[in-house]
Image 1 (cartoon, rainbow, N blue to C red):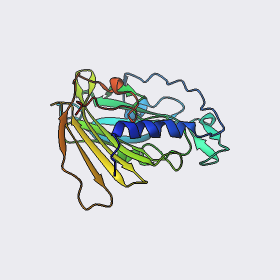
Image 2 (image 1 turned 90 degrees about the horizontal axis):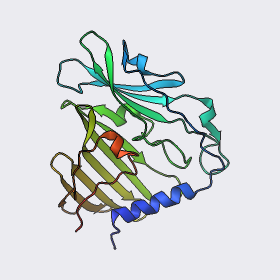
Image 3 (image 1 turned 180 degrees about the horizontal axis):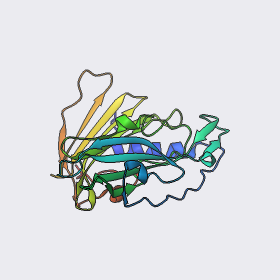
Image 4 (image 1 turned 60 degrees about the vertical axis):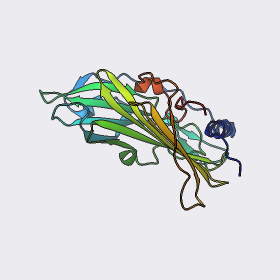
Length: 248
């Protein structure tokens, strides 16, 4: 069976899903400013938003426990009536990620605010991008890095399913992208493509397989065509981002 390049499959999926008629317009949202300092993590939750998840852990080199917040807008205007495929009432409330460092005086200092990495829900045929489990999707690791896992799964419009994980580490004022991992599944053919990129070394590998086979093919080593230092705001939408891998 012919194996399609991953970028063609993703382009096909991205074109199909927005084309589905859902009978509503996504309400406009203004993202609020976030406090630079506060006495508690809750201080950084703006009015009209709620704290969906707090992931504790260390983001810098001191011994104090820091925190990564997942915030979700909580406004009834973003619950829209849907006359097409999917739920009758569709929640388009967006999310924000906020990173906090614990200060020596017991307070907290914001070092990151981002509302692009986790896409806003805009199509009712798409499952929740954090799989309705922010606690499992957003995690801090013992090596002071942290990850966000995004899931792209549509009930109509495309056979493509993806699981994408971005890993970051605080370097100065930059939440630097240090890792990218993706698994793509074509639910019709059962073919899978896995990609893993280390942004610290520039090395990467890809691997093809099938859910009908016991073992995937061997990993094919590759590398980034170029490897500029990318901060989280450079990544943008986490599901639209694609690594710049060398051809061949």
